[in-house]
Length: 83
Image (cartoon, rainbow, N blue to C red; front, side):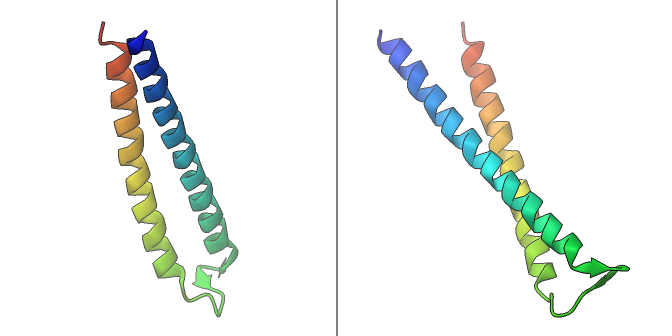
């Protein structure tokens, strides 16, 4: 019984972390669209000067998400194949 409770808790943690990952991906999608909406003919439309900062933020978020997804996959896969 104790083992089932641990598996349920692990799955809930994994599920919560996965939901956070999808929220981050939605954020990056919106940020990317915002950047594209402010570029015309390869040039930024004034006064959109925060693009470098937004791009850096998006790149950092993507890196964090890749690490999180890899960790989630490893944890889920290893836990599922323990026995």
